[in-house]
Image (cartoon, rainbow, N blue to C red):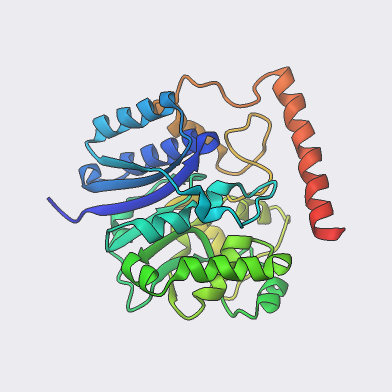
Length: 305
């Protein structure tokens, strides 16, 4: 039968499609889809999308468990233009799951490799394994007084250790007390709380699509753990793609982003194949352009007022 692979994820109604497509890509690219159990925090998934998830479950004979979050759990944490309440669902998931180990994956990902290999990673006494974020500015690390920094969109976690050491509560409290200094509220907080309790995974397991812009001279890489050449080589052969960009996403018709074709490929194979691409109309384009302006203004006033 093989090892059961516990996958944790979370969404509200807005990202349900993207979560479904991520799950579909994961199952297509593993040799053992029947060994996967998905624990999905459901923050308002529509009935239509639930039916699509059920189609995936039936097609691959995997298991899915939908968990309703306790919203009182997040009531004190702020939400911003890019951080909805769903950002904090991972705290609820980690604290309430009864499994020993779990691989947490963000919705805005596409899986190109077999994550069974990743799931077998030994934690070596650490609470979690994650990938160093090569786009984190050195100044940000200095501000947080950290030597290294992981991207929290993917991590393999010892759930029992997480619960025993109250990681969610500690990260929650740190964010409440230090919100003004945090650039990425939950991710920064988790990095502070777990700074001595995580180990590094290969870059291939969380390839940030935005790294592709560096190839064209847009942005800089933090090359502390790998050279620019090595990071770009891995970018060209990712096992998991992460569209962790504050502004551009592959499901929006107008948005330019590396690996857009990968997302659309799995969308066309999935139960969401007939759903029109977001913003694929004159009105949609105008709406998206308005969003760019609104986003930029909100970001500016939040960070520079």
